[in-house]
Image (tube, rainbow, N blue to C red):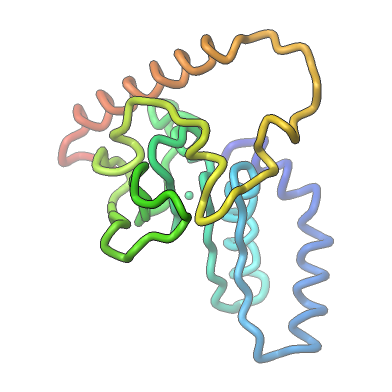
Length: 186
């Protein structure tokens, strides 16, 4: 487990477990659903697994544009390719991939969403080479928390172009790695 994701969960886990227990005590028939976008997707996956264990209850987990976790990806969103598989990280499976040009209005038909199984497939987001940050900002509706307007104004030591080139290089390395694994994929 990535230490940054683990630390992010550990910072909030006591409060989350307490709130969920309180909610279930008041509403025992309620279903628990964990969601998250981007970093929240990684934390949500960990949270869902933890809640399943401590509550002994079925928990649904939906993540959007999360780094390497039931997961939904959009077009060539670069975040789901991080951290790279070549470093040993894997996604959960299946992946529900919304093709880049499926709909401009945020409405997709079921046949416009591709289901990819396995942790090393190249048929969905992992097989795209182009980077589309805009795809990361729209999952059925605008997801504003990651937009440029919401970022802190800081000096950036790496240009956006250099960062995009690095992510593209990592994507190509992952694709080569998965092709080399063939039938031996985990």
